[in-house]
Picture (tube, one colour):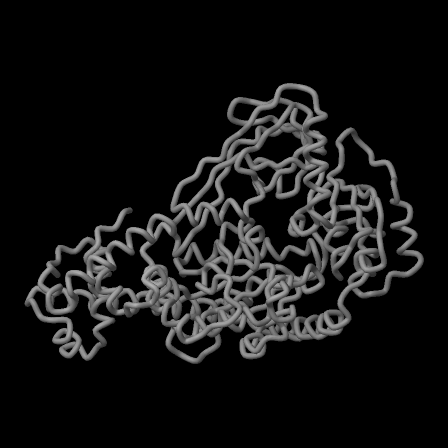
Length: 553
């Protein structure tokens, strides 16, 4: 399927699995669709399975966005605690499209948990509560990592959510990264578990082979310990004065920390003239992408000057990594988009394009690791192979069989699409936009009307119970309306509600707990306060007390 066909299908509002071999343009198509949604003001969420993958898309992890966090299960208590978080209500209420990138590394049971959360907040039993879900990835790449306390790692196509989504399969064809025919044969051979002697001979020729040019190639290793040691050793051995570039940070500490943990640019970047570096962000206008290699030729005061492998001179000016929600920037960091690149792990290389690399696959411990590492390169001439084991050339047999099904489904979908008249296609795409926009307008109008009604009842000095009865709502819902009125800076008087709903001693106890919790979490979440109070107070009591604390911005 072509990139244009895939984009047309996305614009129809279908749930989609966007896939294809490494370098086929999956990220490009996703970015095109994201720009389309922004242009038409359709609220969307950009997420990924890992922090590094999310940072490439200026998004967040799906675990963070959904509120799932590090949980492996969901209990009624968990959902009750999540329900108290206003930002999650707003997030799910406003979002129309959910994008999840690099899904090969997402556990099957976690996709089911996100589905459960979405249904809960959207208050319906449609898959993901009726969101358009766009999954993107390649199951031949690195699989989810299981820890000892987690369930067995399975790809997401083993999940119930996958079965229920009725996904349209968009399998991109071709490669925009590799044009070397022999190299493409090698990669396709690994991808199909059919590495012949002829293909092995191509790799054999690259063992300890010399690479053309003065630039030292990046070394890819399977383990962090090898990478850290090489980078530190090489920088120390480089002559000249060192200059450090410090990251600027804006936003809540917890969000900034999340960006820093997932962003490949270090908090303090120390360079010397002659240092081997790698760009860790895309900037097509300037002329580099995530993975472009270069050498530092000058350490400017604010921006180092880099000479790339192709000979281009680039001033590496600081760039931003952000966390966005509903079109608003919640936190950001700014740093020179570089890291030392004498060595990097294969896991961190996923999604990159490299000009040259020395790759050691002798300690490969995961099927797909060899494919990921080798497919970062543009050609065989850029490869110096330091070692390889048999597992590096293997892919999961189950994935191989499933991939054949995906390709077949994609071909059938493309045939159907080819028969649709362009005017009809445009009409259906416009209808999806209209439905999405109508839902957003309706929800906005409902939000304003219902809170204004509650405000009118507050002005009459009605009790919580009386307001709930008048509106046929729960008391908790009335409290949420008051929270919204406070956040929107409405002039409301709620002091009269205190005496009838909470004892002064309990209010002080809860208020103190909120201030203590804020010191460590940076927010005013109900769950953390209940934990501090050892669950001796109820959620309604804590939530009511929160109305009367002076929150720090």
